[in-house]
Length: 624
Image (cartoon, rainbow, N blue to C red; front, side):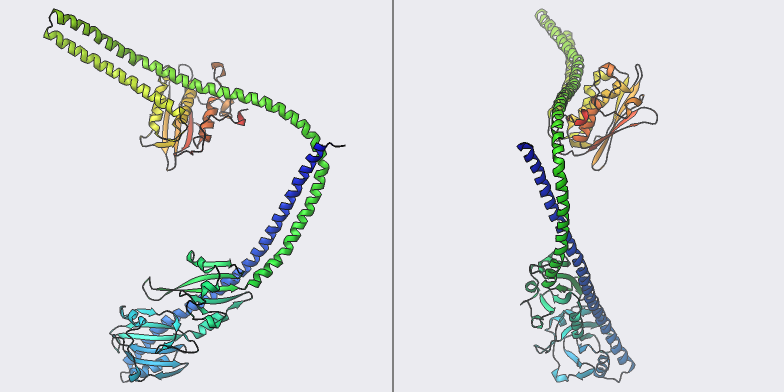
């Protein structure tokens, strides 16, 4: 009979399995649902793109034909008037204009905007307007626009409805004007050829463009509909215009030149593309039109219904598989429970052992750090002995000479004795000052090192100065070896990082080189170089020693690995270097053997370290 605790444990795991499979079934069904909708929307997108492409292509082709036809008309009129000077210009215009079935009006205006010739067309029928009915059009915007151009310029007007005497022709005749500034070499002199083109057939073509699930509309930037399913809204200005008829979609065009498969709040689907018409040769003279492919809301509603069935089947299949898995889990739970009790006891034993080992390793790391700092303190103390001793001797000598001067004053001071006192005093003071300045420099460098190592803040510091400080602090240790330390670092390299950690890294690498790179009595060179790239700096510590022992080469950065354990080395130095470089200084470290013998440690460091890094000495699980 299982205990209550075991039953609750089993039921808890089963509950989690059930919740997991329910969530998985929901997500799988949702993904299947979304993929079904996405695949259908992709097909719809092709329909929309095809409609938009057809509309754009045909409209651009018609505009190109209008530009070409206008220049050809002018060329034809020019040639006829040159070849037959007896022909009246009015008859030439009647003859030429009758060749195009989409002309509604052909006019010639002089430079003052007066109509000289005006021919009205209806199909292939042309009618000349009598002279007394000709008007001055200087007040019309399109005339002002063409008058401001140079001869040879061609302008297109905005797309509008055909008007005469302020009245709109019914039924609507969408019209675009082509205006050519004719130069003075023309038989009629300098003037303006104005050609009105009917775009009724083009608009009907666009209106008839449809696909199985979409229709094509057209609007301008008034905004107003030029082609729409409801004729009453066409050419109606802002009333009932696109922002109202395309809910929450029109605003998307403020951010982009096109909108693809946008599902509005009312579930209608729109794709919109902008067409910028160059009205003249000026780059700023642009009119924007919009082609809109629209799919009604019932398409998206039916699509969701169609996608729901396979989604439900997918979810049901996963639930059935989940039921089988839960049943098997229920049978296996008792066996797992027995094993878990045994594993829990073993785990507790391991955790206790690991805690003790981790504590010992932390103590070893702290001992290693304190040993490094102790070496620096001993080195600085040793270096301070010489300048401080010399300064004391200088001041002591000066004090002795001062006593002698007092005795001489009592017995009668000669000028030569005073001069000698001044000269000796000056030499002693200079010697004392020089040695005190040297001691001050040593103290400043040690102070920088101690402050840097105690700081946990990102600091901008001079790399060469940081290297000089650690080399100076290690001077006593270096003096007792036969190794020269050379520094090849540009004065222009600054880092924003942790200078204390970097100095500890360099100290460990230099200690490693002094202890392991050279045999007893062997002369050698350790060179510290740096190369900067835009975001990083490569710091290299290179020696010309004996290279790395093969027995430690593959595990060089592992904890407690050392070839000098008999000399008191702990084997943590290079491991700490690896941890500091990779986890605090945002870098990585490699070690290579040089071609002529020796070893090079290459530190690739970030110029700016991450402020989220911790400067606490890391003790990772891989040290255990």
